[in-house]
Image (tube, rainbow, N blue to C red; front, side):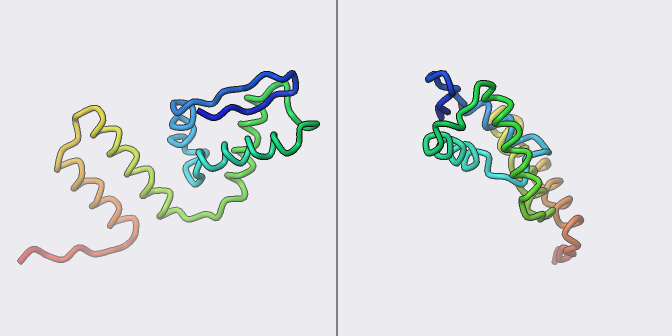
Length: 119
């Protein structure tokens, strides 16, 4: 959990579920959302006169701007999405070798890598 100080002296708490939700969002997949939220907290602590009342809107605007300025690396973003999906399947207990093979095959296809033929 990360507490963002607000203008009225209270805190807006961002928990792991919120961070995970934003991280899975295609809008923010190129970001390290945890690191961005930590930057927000540091910035708000260093700039008390600029603290917000509607902190949720501030967070969404910050993440949107960070995503716009993030270097675009489609392969990395795709790999992270596949890994996140696989982690979710593992958490649910439904991942299988077949799912892993399909994810790897799709990654190879997107990256233009030809798999070695079996011997």
